[in-house]
Amino acid sequence: TLYYAPEYSANRPLDARSDVFSLGIILYELLSREPVDPNRKRFLPDVDTVRRGIPRFLSDATMRAVALRPELRFRHAGEMGEVLESILAQLAAKQIEAEQQEAFARLKRSQRDALRVRAGMAGILQQVPVEVGQRVAPGTNLARVAEPTRLKAVVRVPETQARDVQLGQRA
Figure 1 (tube, helix red, strand yellow):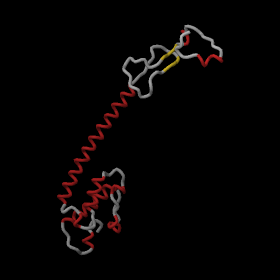
Figure 2 (cartoon, rainbow, N blue to C red):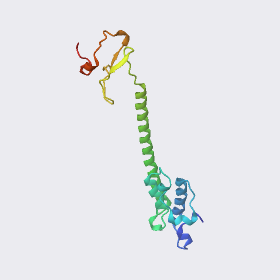
Figure 3 (cartoon, rainbow, N blue to C red):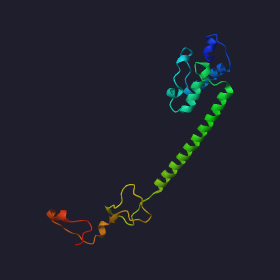
Figure 4 (cartoon, one colour):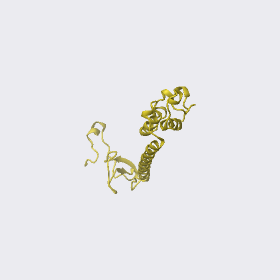
């Protein structure tokens, strides 16, 4: 008796919408991945609240099929099938869009992973004149690197005057 429409239990006339209800209960169980309690058929929560990730339009179609009042259901299984086919097409389009976005993200990750910044010499980083996220052209000077073993001069400045010394200042 689990899949019978409410009008069956109430000894009201049955029609194609009664079959739609039964099909809707099966669809509800498939989507929610939970069996419907026969005593709870009158209080079914929307399937997208029972299981996350169910698109709203699919939940709406399922809930229309299991409506308690027959006049709110699909008129017959053919009408329900047309709506479900339309939903399948929408889901296929969303799947294609998701795959395109994933492919784009993979491309960007591979480009990022392939990015290598190299200095022409080993040394100590002195200055980085670019900002994080700033676009730069290939060959742009990104940093100043000094090799400590090839210093041109050692400048000793008293601590009291050190604050007056600027990077790049002429002697």
